[in-house]
Image (tube, rainbow, N blue to C red; front, side):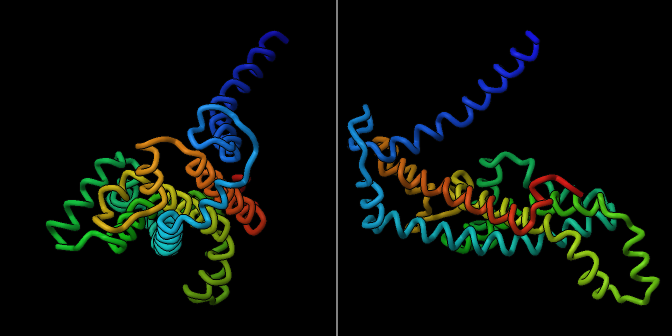
Length: 258
């Protein structure tokens, strides 16, 4: 009994450490104080300020565009990579796909910066950010798809081939429905990683292109205002909405079922 009480206390302490800072951000986004030093009163003024902040809206639009394009491309490429890793079991293929996942973000950001400038002679901007986000998102999608395929019986594919189905028909009617929850979960993860990425974006953005994390960073260098809390709250709301949608359309992906 005493051990159970200690276990619950430890669990609650960990969850409090994780979620209390998020709760503080949400609460203080409604604080009627410019400096956020103390609670003054309830207001929705900071959300109204956001609606009229052109730079913030432009940064948010850039982040949404980059996240949408990069997540779609990463989902397609990551799904193919995950299927190839499961089918061929080539160590070098797994190494190449998963290296960006394990690599420190600052090292990956510097490497991509040098590659874009010195090898591709590419002007840093929206294109370089999208390419960078696709690069580090592919591995996450591939891991999820590969794990999903690992739990599927190979006899299903063999039965489809025995019945005369072509490779395309097998993929369309057997493989794709089985891995669809993993594809949705991978796309969700790629979108989430892209929309709030700062380190890699910082190195590959160039001059004149600003995303939401870069905009927030430029604001908190002066002070953490309720406007920053408000945009952070909306970003959390967007992420939670995506998770709820994923649980509706692909419930097995979040439950961990094979």
